[in-house]
Image (tube, rainbow, N blue to C red):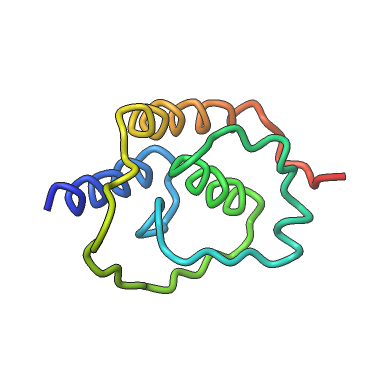
Length: 112
């Protein structure tokens, strides 16, 4: 239950900071068209892990590309443990703020 609540509030937090209209900002099935990947300068993507997923969606959105969400259902983990850690959580919290702040000064130019 804690993981579900954390995911729910994380997506609300990201939507609040970024103003993206995406429901699930940290997970889900992701498929980028060739045009999106050729447009984004991947060297400018700074975040890792869950925050990487957020930054990719945010950058895609800033370039004006359409983002389509396809719901998926995860089954309960049968083996192993969650990869979530304090470091990943902190990067997501502070990284999203830094990413949004950088976007005020960054021109979203097509990659060369």
